[in-house]
Length: 116
Image (tube, one colour):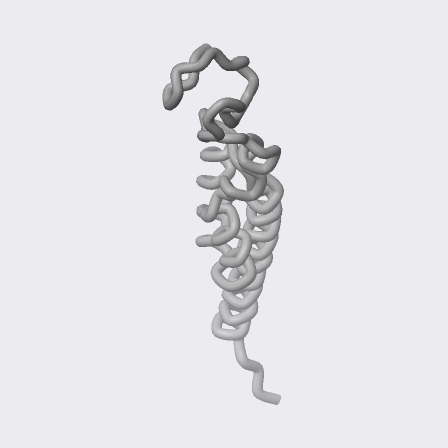
């Protein structure tokens, strides 16, 4: 390999030319090559947070994020799974509450009133 600045022959593993001192190529550090934390799926984070407030929206966002992470890779799989679990649990609890309220209201409206 030859230096593109001075033309002297250099070893392929060098980053800086020993003859002219110019940088030949980028030095990749461990964090740059692995990309740790840089590819967090934002939808997974949004879905996790929404699961506490608007559970059905959090569930939907978390499912979409989980599918994106499964197909494209990236970080946030745990957040997506937690968002799915929380969103499903809170949605089920809300559905049970609504059915119970409708049942109680329906029973009280339809029940005959006895005067003694």
